[in-house]
Amino acid sequence: MSTQVPETETETEAETDVEHSEPLAPAQEERMRKKAEGRAEREERARREAEERANAEEDTYHLKVFRFDPEVEGKQEPRFDDFHVPFKKGMTVLDALIYARDTFDSSLTFRHSCRQAICGSDALFVNGRQRLGCKTQLSDLDEPVRVEPLPHADVEKDLVVDMDHFYDQMEAVEPYFDADELPDGELEEQRQSRANREKVKMSTRCIWCGACMSSCNIAAGNNEYLGPAAINKAYRFAMDEREGEDRKQHRLNIIEQENGVWRCQTQFSCTEVCPKDIPLTEHIQELKREAVKNNLKFW
Amino acid sequence: MSQSYDRGLVEDFGRWREFSAGMWAWVFHKFTGWVLVGYLFTHIAVLSTAISAAGQSSEVIAANNDVYTTVIVTLESLLVVRILEVGLLAVAVFHILNGCRLLLVDLGVGLDSQDKSFYASLILTGAIVVASVPTFLAGVF
Image 1: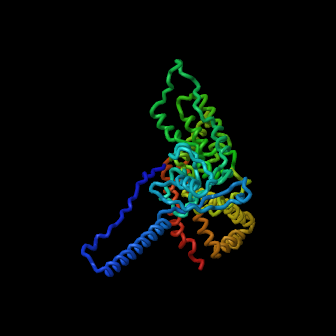
Image 2: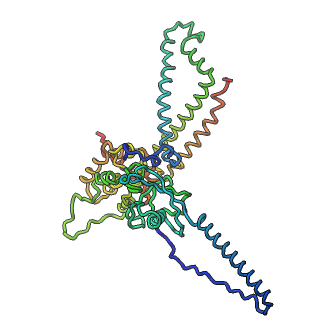
Image 3: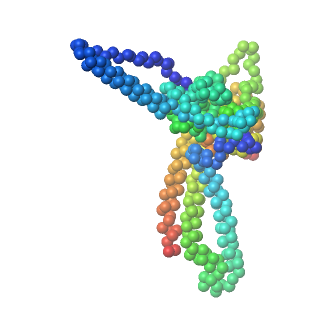
């Protein structure tokens, strides 16, 4: 999240020389004035140089950003562009990208919207890991900061990837509340027990950013696999007690298919990268156990 | 999700440096599993010499000159085989320990410390292998 401190005006105070109180001989005075001028000039130059050096070394961040544009002839070959973005306290990767786009290259393309880790638009591959651009502080990263589009997804342009497949998988698990029985009264509420709410709490936090799907080795090689995010969605509703037995059975039928939960090989990559700290592997494992329990019959 | 699309630097094999504990555990588990499957074949091949040895006369067997004994003695006198045996132990021990870890993962026990249990199984494997070296290499030099 962007936690930038508001800009403060830095005041440059003009120094006034109040050394010479007693009158001097004109030649001497002239010499002293020239000397003082020379000194001031040297100091000014040194100060400016130091400032420039500080700007160049400490206060800018070096970003290497993946660039690719299939529609422009000279940009069809993927490449990395360097941006040196002036650093402000609390600056995130997304802030740096916005600065680079607004200042250096207006054709730099990336998705972003809320800038506070809610919309899930700006999942990026930053320094070898799937992260939300708006949730990653530049100061936490080693330079140069490599910003790439999510791996294992088709790049449309620069940092924008095709999310259609991800959304298809999410929708395949029917990610909406659908109870077997509705309450009698028109305005009756469908209440959930506190314990049950706690159980599904973490799974409701998914923001559909696709970071987990991109990090998953299995999903990379198998387009049929539902993927961590979709299974987590299935978990959120299958574990919701208000939906009823029939509905839960239907949900289990979806997730226990060949390319459902059983493709997961517990690499923990998704849990590792999830920006909302959802214990994805734990949820997948619990659904595996549910699926086994559902099919084991002793008679 | 994209098999047909070359993204150059983004999806190269150099990415293994960025693997986390769970990923390494998976890679090692796969690798050790395949090594053990491979060993199974040599194991069966060596042990099956006992079939032809059983057909030999009782004097030959009593004199330790049968096919099975000769094969085993010859193999065990080779330094390479002794070193491979240490490797086999390492592979088997890791596979067992990580298998126990995966059992816990499947049961949903201690998923938060899955990385620690992976490191623990690595260290334990190392310790057991080092401790076994004198036994495996005794008498071959």
